[in-house]
Length: 471
Image (cartoon, rainbow, N blue to C red):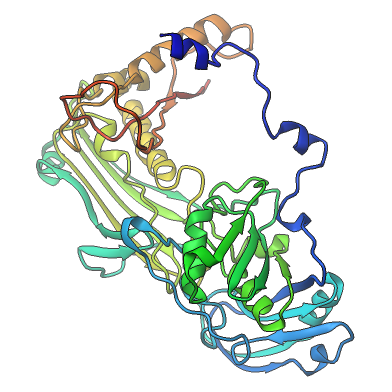
């Protein structure tokens, strides 16, 4: 107890450690670092979404004063393709090394790199490079149809079974259910757009590599770059002082980083490469577009008897990012018959990636919207419908929750509305729409003070109701 009291910060005002340096402008972000002899790099982007480079004319750009090099497939040097290691080590969403071939698979793909003494000269040189293409019609269809994938597929994080969860006979229970709901929900692609632009500054000291990068996962980045440049991990140092927001887009390495490293290797000087705002929309990830069919079967009283969640998401032509929309479906509600299954659809786009609650957010949008539609069909309060289908255990894994306070959240939310709704001008009508959320809590090594004889679900969640009113 004494130790707990001594370490407690609850109820006491606390200073944010990095607050003063951020608000005073002292904090140094990735693009703020400067070094003697620093050069600047600007990528040349593909202006088609599908096809092949036929010619790359760099003559004018190379003659411009202050230009050090125009790099492309033939002179960038060897960059190896990284692989996923044990325990999800070495995650990289876009595995193809930059300039590996002349094939263009998405608009904005980097096809060359201009390096110069100043940023302005590098930008002018990049604009002077002339690229011609053999164009093909890109596949950018909005309607998503699942590919004919095997039952188990490789993803950026390891193998995944397309049939994610199943219990009972969901199809038969749905067919015989007195009340049925069958809806398809679509979520569009969303871009991260962090305030701080992605970028990297790379420098070599013999066989030792140092990169200044706004990474959300520096150990993972070190492992990936060590593979790409054939180095021992101990020879690679990643420095991240601050991250000016990322929302997941700065979790894994993007192709601008190995480009800066390769250019610095070739020129023997530090090289800084910072993406433009336009580039972040194309070459630094986004939340995948999803198309989700949700089928609910229920009794007239509102008890779920069947839940089927079939979803498809788009991905890039080469990569295998997995948008796990079914993450929370198996345990969110009590239902004896359930099936969760996913499919994938390749498109000529830059690879999707993690974004603020990846998978669960668009997935719960679909299942929660379906629950609201079902409540409307039953003429039932959507909060009451959820309470009626509250699980006692994690039915996906068949083990208890370590804690779950979902019903208390709903009750507290209702009390808050009763106390504060009228003074804020909120209509105190029956709540027509309700959304609940589940977010992952990843276990980490901790000192165990007492044995825990009962296995608990790893789906440790804090649930928070989000309310919406309709007059």
